[in-house]
Image 1 (tube, rainbow, N blue to C red):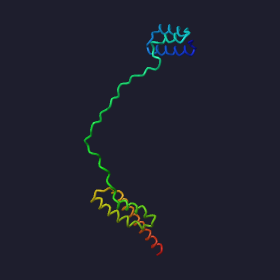
Image 2 (tube, one colour):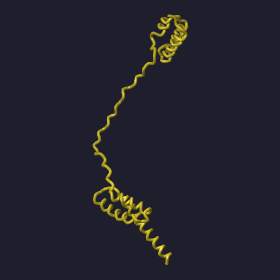
Image 3 (tube, rainbow, N blue to C red):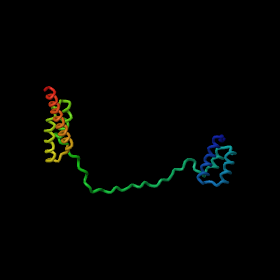
Image 4 (cartoon, one colour):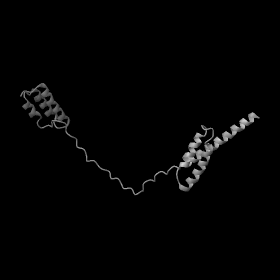
Length: 156
């Protein structure tokens, strides 16, 4: 079967790859390219590139090294302690006290002190919630008393 120009170009590409990979010397490369452009049949082209790989050569990769993970003998970290419910209640009541005109300030203080005692006894979390509830509760009570004093003084 007769070879086309595209067939000749494919053969030349194979020769270029072989030369680039160091499989052909400069002289042999030039000689084969000349013969490829003069080839009339597929058989002649096959003879020119028969000893060269026809596609990309797969790269050899080193075997993957699997790192050995050392076994740890440390216990798992402890679970975070549960937050005390009274502490959460104290914080919620303290935050709501300005919106309820100080109505929830006293429960915030009571729940905060109760929560601190429970936290010391049981080791639960929520110390900050309890303290915040106490502080906000007392501030709301103080502001309410100050407001009442101002109203009484203004009326007198």
